[in-house]
Length: 239
Image (cartoon, rainbow, N blue to C red; front, side, top):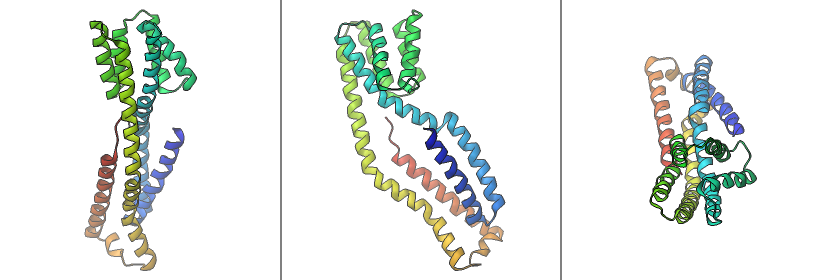
């Protein structure tokens, strides 16, 4: 995960310098853009993309947790002990610092402090804004209060998440080619500007040394950035 954000850091630095030099013919503006991007990067690590990555990891790991819980319930364990057994099995599948093992460690500590299971699960659902977790907790607690078949509820939830993950992976595969096309299209304006600057020196000077030209470059840059954000949101897949 840290490697992902190290690459992103390098990407932000190169992008910032490229924007300053290609769109404004100014290294100073490039450095200013880099500073803004680094501030954005720092905020993103704390609350933005890093959180999204963690939530996506947890959504995938949650399926394995449900399968383990279902198996423990079928073996005759109580709900509380099923959660404890699930944590032991998850530690065999994932490292201690994995999102799911951290969550089950928290829940096990709460169980050891005699906190009711209903409250533990509600806090878990509120802490992690993942639809599959919230839906499961709602149905599971309803079944527990009404004496419903919790084994069937858990098994069904696990199967639904499996189908959801497989569907998301299929969509990701279908969209992968379009994502590469979108990434290339983002570079087209910069490639054209670089081409003119190399092949026809001075051709773009009017855009760099006049207020109207700078405004035009800013509009082009803004449209390019807006298109990139729009393309990313269209292709985003939530689990």
